[in-house]
Length: 258
Image 1 (tube, rainbow, N blue to C red):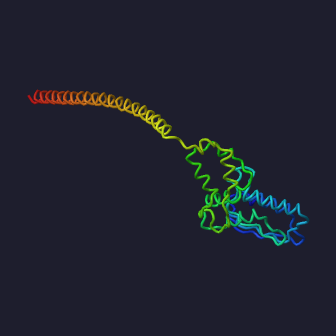
Image 2: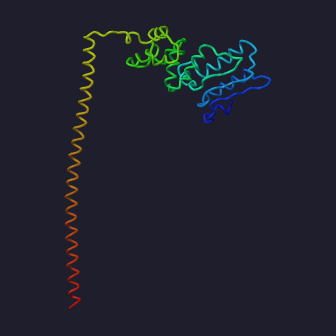
Image 3: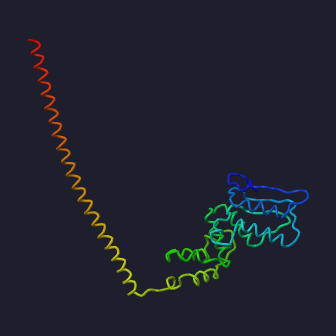
């Protein structure tokens, strides 16, 4: 199990079992180890010992926690969206797991596509926590509700219907006035005027900043001009000094010749 928990193990399928049977506890440990595994697609267990119904539920819950953990929105998003099935003659997955495994097998879907599809098919059909969505902007809310509504993008190879219960749960617990309000023309005008005032304020600040930068540019240009003049003066002085030094050398040469 520790070996499979390492993300670097590139094993896609595993068939395992024992002559005297493979316990549910061992199978559960194997499933728990696959949470961070990004390559394992299928696990087949030969001779699984399922003694009673609670054992089946234990195994089913472990598989659900792996591919569709509905304990929280964050846990669901971090579920394994690659693992495609637990195969054993002694075990039949629940309907929820069948949906999750089927979605994970859709090769045309990216990881995000599978996540959105499972959110719509599984997570939003539970008594999900609305709190993670309370702070989203109202402009994004239609996209969230679109995941719950009937859409071909989320139905491919999966038999789904529109989720009215999930939509009701969202609207009932979210900011209903903002979501359902139809502003009057007067309110729209007032809102636009307020936005316009903010834009004018921002424009005035930008114009002030432009003026300040223009002043700095003029000062910089003046300093550059002064430095060029100083540089030209130093060049002329250096040339005069070189000429005078050359004249003195010539005079000394003439004296030595005489």
